[in-house]
Image (cartoon, rainbow, N blue to C red; front, side, top):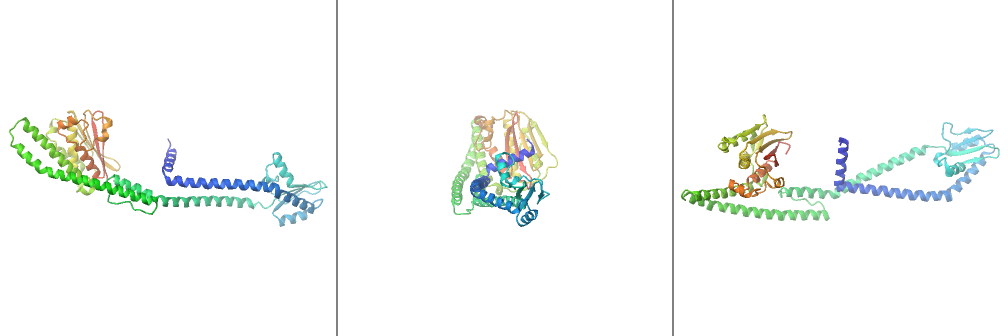
Length: 441
C-alpha cells in the first residue's frame, strides 16, 4: 500500500469513527439533496412556464422587431437596437450581410438549445426570421457577461455551502464536546485515577450521562478503597502473629517438619510483604522516591547482591548497551523488579542459561530477561502478571513462588510510566521492561 493510499485509509477510518464527522457529512448531504430537489422542481416549473407562457410572447416580440427592421433590413435600425438592448443580430441575404458581433464564432445560439434534433431545430426557428425579399435575421444574446455572473454565482453558492459546513462542524463539535470529556474521564478511571471527575458542561442528556459516569466512578473508588483498606488491615495484623510463629518454629527440633514449617512461614511473610508493596505501588508515581540512576549499574548490583551464589553454577549472558542515559528511577523498586525477574527465570529456566540485555530505542530504554525453559502456553501469557496467578500452581509452590512477583514487576513498570510485556522466545520466556525517556512518557 502506497503512503497516499495509507493516508486515505487513515482519513476514511477517522471519519467512520468520528460521530462529529458523520453528522457534518449528513448535514452536507441533506443540504445538497435539498438544493438538487429544489433546482429540479424549479426547472420543471419554469420549463412548463416557458412552453406555455414565455415562448409565445417572445415569438410575437421577435416578429415585431423583424418587421420594424424593414425589408430589406435596415442596418442602422439594427445597430440602434443592439446598442439599446443586450441582443445580437446577424443579417444574411442577397443585399445585406451584416453582424453586430463580428468576433463571435458561434452564431448557432447554443445558449438556447442544441443544434441537433427537433428541439434544436425548433429553437433555431424561434430565433430566426425571414423577410419577404429573401433576407434572414438571426437574433441572439449580445451581452455575454451573464456567463461570468453565472460562474460567480456558482462560486458564491459553493463558498456558502462550505461556510455552512464549517459552521455545522463547529456547532456539532460544541454539542458533542462532552463526549470527549466522558471518554477522557473513562480512560482515567480505567487507569485507577479518580482524582479528577468529569466536568459537566451542559444540563442536557450528555450532562446527565457525565454525572452518571462520575457517580459510577465514585462508587467504584469507594469499593476499591474498602477492599484495599481491608487487605492492608489484615496484612498488618498478620505480621505480628507470623513473627511469633516463626520464633516458635525456630525452637522446634531440627528435621523435615521444622524445615517445612519455616518454608511455609517464609512464604506467608513474602505474600504479606508483596501485598503491602503492591498497595503502595498502586498509588503510581507518587509512591516512588526517584533519583537519576544508571540502569546498567542497577542491573549489575542486583545480579551481584542477590544472585551471586545461584549464578555460580548457572551461566548468565549479560548484554548491556553502552552509554545509556540516566533516568529518574526508584532504585529500591527497580532492584525489586530485577530480583523478581531473575528469580522467575532461575526457577523456570530448566537449568539453562539466562540472558539479560539492555538497549536503547528512539524514545525509551529497554531491559529484557530471557530464560530457556519450557515457556508458557500462548493463551496464558496475558494472565502472567495477575496477582496469585500461577500457570503451574503445584510446580510454582514447590519452587517457593507466591504468585506476586510478576504482578509487582508490572506495578513497578507502570509507576515509572513504562510497561512490562511477555512473549515466548522459543525456547523460554522473554520479559521486556520498557522505560520511556524524559519527555516521551
